[in-house]
Length: 142
Image (cartoon, rainbow, N blue to C red):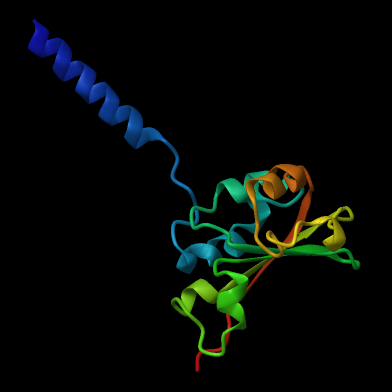
């Protein structure tokens, strides 16, 4: 009887884990899926889009000029500045997310040690902004 209960418990755990939704962007190669499925995110909060991205967003930049947008990258600012880019070519892709309202992004208020780094606090602070457009730009191959 104990073996039957253990078997059912194990099966339940396995089935439960496999039923969880997988994130749309598993690697930086998948970032283009966001543009393909753009309609799924239009007029929805930015946090919905960010939940679909598994690779860590390392840098973020916000533009308060109209149109308002964020630029997300999967490499650090130091890696971007180096002439010979570190990391793979795919990691150098830029994700542009345009939002409806102005972004309260003040460079002078950001701690210098954070700079362009995208933090969990940034994701929480800007997560309710409404997405209006998505663009993905990859660097030219050398």
